[in-house]
Figure 1: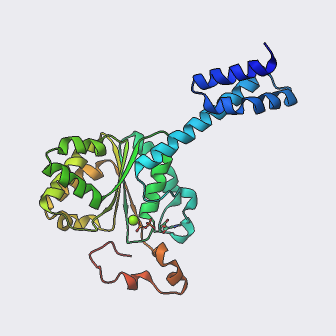
Figure 2: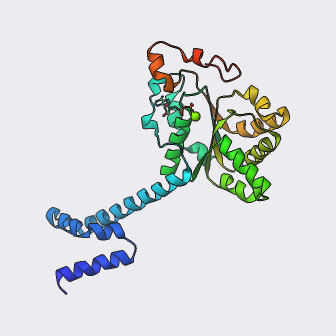
Figure 3: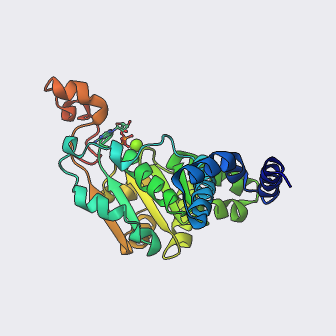
Length: 266
Ligand code: ADP
Ligand code: MG
């Protein structure tokens, strides 16, 4: 069999085995191997590495869209010097993801714009990179979704979407007060995930005000009991990154948020 025919047949076999990337780089890899006088194993390893990398990128792409992040930002994009109240070492430690493995929670508290969502997304992206399933949802969307499912008699099924991921990120807890059904559904979710799966929660409301937020002190303390049993709380105090331009002009964001005294203070 001629060399060209053999090459075409090998490409065909690779395609049949689903190794698309390897098939596409086969001629170039053969050329590389000949030029470098690479060993057989070096050649094979290069071919398979490219295939594995391509597959992982495809996996990440799919998982990223399934995770429903509002944006894709990483810890590398986070300017720790802007937010000195954050202990960079603590965040880097969290990025090692043992809290996910140990099914613990992370609560990011602070006023608007200090980077809560950014850090939650960054930790979520880190978890995805490590092949952990992640789902991001805002509290508003979560309670609306569970309410609808409850009304349509399919709450149990719908809850699974939020129970199954290894890491659930629930963003913006406390921006809106909840009525009894929404509070009960959220409590149910947190109870189901307790010691079963990790959560990251972001909130602008300090724990003392969660009773008012849930409209029920007893339910709020039972909820906090579960959430905080195995949890790291990160209290962020500082200026809003969104107001960076104003901050540079020496206008404190405390002035801009002064009308919401019940929220986490600056
Ligand atoms: P919030 O605390 O309200 O959730 P976000 O995390 O959404 O705030 O931050 C608001 C915007 O500012 C986002 O675009 C985020 O990426 C950016 N941001 C916040 N803090 C920082 C920071 N320290 N370094 C870089 N970007 C930041
Ligand atoms: Mg946010």
